[in-house]
Image (cartoon, rainbow, N blue to C red; front, side):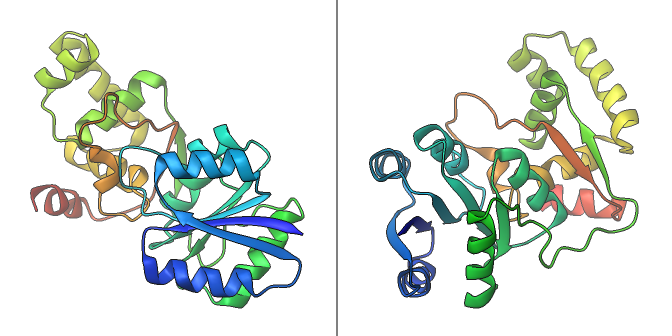
Length: 235
């Protein structure tokens, strides 16, 4: 029997996962609440081979990282509300073995689970990669700066948070503008928002109460209307 652990932020979706996964021959499915302590405890005790998680990307903890610590052998399939290029790439960077839209059919879900069990990676279902999309690796310092910029911090506040001078922060920003191709801090922050939040609304970037900001190892940059940045950040 293949052990499959599943969890969702939405009770109704969780009930649907229970019906689909629990009704498949050869699978032993177990549903839990998407809570850090319970996920870590059950993953470590039950030792699932596959985990199916519906997660928005928001909050102060990352269930993918939690699962990888508690059950290193477990392969993870994420169900995402918005299957964007940024979400798919960041899911892969986090260590997931696959990503599907929450709108996927039961057949598509089971096909993805089977492929992941066979050692495959399932990421490109339904994703359109616009022409001109690029992937840019970030240094630790660049990642920290972008994450703080997304939280709405000014240069002086960023400097204090990172233990740098305000002038050094300005230098880093100028270099990031050139590296990423951003016209200004608003556009750079939008790129950060898109990559930090799996559901695309920026909630995953804020992480209120977290001791350390979220971290990005890479950015997925795709063409967009520069006016969108100002509209999103002023909303």
